[in-house]
Length: 267
Ligand SMILES: Cc1cc2nc3c(=O)[nH]c(=O)nc-3n(C[C@H](O)[C@H](O)[C@H](O)COP(=O)(O)OP(=O)(O)OC[C@H]3O[C@@H](n4cnc5c(N)ncnc54)[C@H](O)[C@@H]3O)c2cc1C
Image 1 (cartoon, helix red, strand yellow):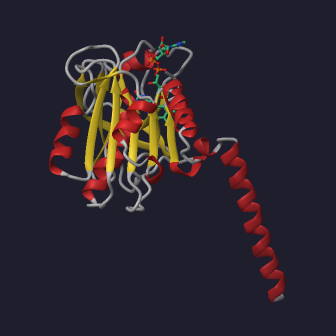
Image 2 (image 1 turned 135 degrees about the vertical axis):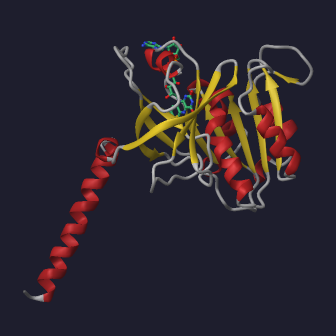
Image 3 (image 1 turned 45 degrees about the horizontal axis):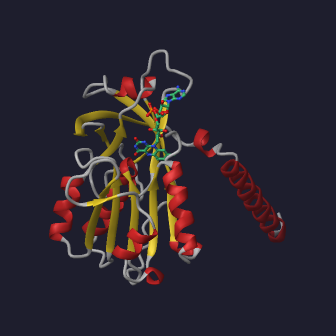
């Protein structure tokens, strides 16, 4: 067979594969095509009155980047119209040998069933998905604007960055309703105590004890971040809060290439 013919065939096959993969990506069919991973619960840990962490076995060969999420399926009898699968960010860091999912309790059959599952329950998932990553350019300080359970991918990024001893300034502005229900507070405080690169500012929107109060807004961001133009911003939380914050940042003149966000649809 002539060499040019073989080359042409190779180029055509590459183009076809590229087109198919782009099509699948757009249609989100890649989720269906992904290999399903089997795992099981190895530990269950309530971390606040309304959030529980599930530690899962890390399947051999499974790899992910800090900030990514998986789509988990649980054994759920008679699921409601939302079904028995959910997207969930990994709150664990890639260097750890377990996978951790941290869910806010809820009213769906998925959430209710989740709280009845015991250690040893087999689960399956597809993934990892997502592009909510920490920019490893250490010359740009990172500012995380987080609402409640939106801390899960940020927790993963921070732990991984500190583990890698990345010399990057990280500031977290973390908003919750009450100071008694702040996922990962103790762990974040300990990390901040031992790492000068990490600073955490808490704000609460409903209780009035000591500390900062109110939603994250322009004034709060300006107060905490001395040089807005030098920083990059990462946001994660329920859709309204995340999209409102994105708008606020744009109004403050932060360019789109300095804004990274993940929206927790479903809340
Ligand atoms: C990329 C990504 C990452 C995510 N990561 C996390 C994470 O780390 N942790 C986490 O907790 N969540 C995460 N989520 C959100 C998660 O996937 C669920 O959408 C969310 O937890 C809501 O769960 P739920 O549907 O079981 O509703 P619930 O938590 O039970 O309830 C949430 C709201 O939906 C309403 N609702 C519940 N069921 C129904 C129903 N059948 N019909 C109509 N309304 C209903 C409730 O009244 C309530 O207002 C993530 C989402 C995305 C997209």
